[in-house]
Amino acid sequence: MPSPEAQPTHRDSEHYAELQADMLRQWEQLPPYQQAEMVVMLVESKLKESGIRLSWQVESVDEERSFVVTSLNREDLARTNLSEAQIALLSDDDLAHIAGKLEDNYVELMFWEDLAAAARTVLQVKYGQDTTNEQ
Image (tube, rainbow, N blue to C red; front, side, top):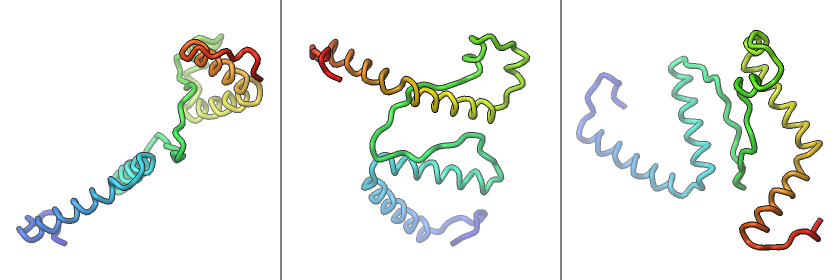
């Protein structure tokens, strides 16, 4: 393989073009969630080689498509009774911890009931289904 400074020869260019075409054919055989995971892995790898540390984290994507329910940011905290000074003290790690506690509490206390109610509303409004007698 030529050094980064060296100009690739015509033979090298043809070889790289064949490799790229082969990679693209294989790429297209992957399901979208695995393509997404590969993109993240490639970006993380290149950033690590460059000495850049990522400040975000990506969780593995399940085969079954997931939908985000909510998120948390500093503007959300401004709507609470916390002062600007208190909010400024909270790090991103603190916010991640708070978000985790909120997620745990929501799932344990209200999520399933809220999920069923929202689904019933969509079924009734969009599809005209009567869901009043269903548990």
